[in-house]
Image 1 (cartoon, one colour):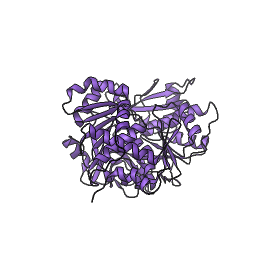
Image 2 (cartoon, helix red, strand yellow):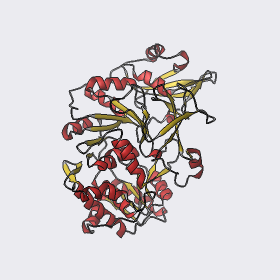
Image 3 (spheres, rainbow, N blue to C red):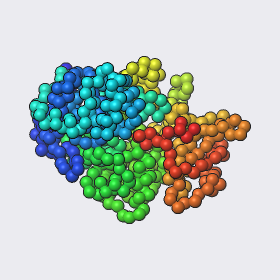
Image 4 (spheres, rainbow, N blue to C red):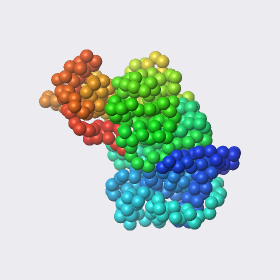
Length: 496
């Protein structure tokens, strides 16, 4: 049976009489469901005019904007594959993505388009690079009607490139039906997004997390979302919340920590928010406590991946447990295994495997990596967790970040959380380094609050009250910032 996600998420609202409902807010302007449907048709016609055909890839180096929405769904309606990528990459990174994806068309912000055009000569598949202005001119001349391609639900709609924090990026492929399943199980089933909601995601749509938060979660139920193109500092985030009054807010844990610093300077009104979601990195209990105390809002930590399209473990509203990543989302299964693949007991750290309807079947052009990660119906996440008796999962770190100290496993996340609990510490990163005898010991890097003079001896004394002796870092260095991926995750390989 034919199924096209653009028809389901976009055209359905107009067909069912919701064309006048707001779908997005951008630059102080409301964009209705009918506006979106027309823009999608025009963008699809423009892409088709450039020769884009079913199953071919279109690279989107676009900020959160109406152009992203129109191009993403326009490609989907043609049966093509949308490949969103970061707008702030270097030329060699874009060159790799062009070659790896074999993109036929690129639509990009002007600055990104200039870089991509410089490296595009090396791509034999690329036919056109459009700026947003050039796309707008083509859309203005294009027909406002577009019949959907006769796709089926298993056809590929989207490639999500991983951050590449430990190597070259790889594209996890996802089908039309994956988007419906993620929207139903996570957007509606966990976050309870409803038609009167307005979502605001600090994470951009070129990340899988932001794509759900801003694009297809609200569009599933006819809700609306904020399109904010620029990268936001904490003060600006508060300004947007106060001006636009969103009801659901998404950010990484680091952003919440930074927001708390700004919030202490003057009162901020977050009364419109009913739900605050944290993802992308472990949420320190100290940040959870401070946010709840400051704003009266619990932070709901969730876990997902590009390979799963969105979340698979989450703290549900009304059932959040401090320090925990939550429980397996209904519709997903999760299990923890040891290095030999055997189940581990309650309270024991193991490798997390998940099974669910949104998991990617393979990485594009990465056969060996696919075999290591996609284990039949199960997906090896690369994360280490332990589970309590009530079924809540607790993040212990990435499998390649865990430390073996004195023959015992040590989680960098546990040490980082203990350091962040110190009133003088904003962020912390922990890696393993050999001591003078060549033995592996934890080594910490911390970012201090402005004006705080915490020293290594003070921080070690603080940790001794909270951690076993073998978990105390051999060294604690003060740094101005921690290296992170574009999604906000600490790059421990750079710290090492």
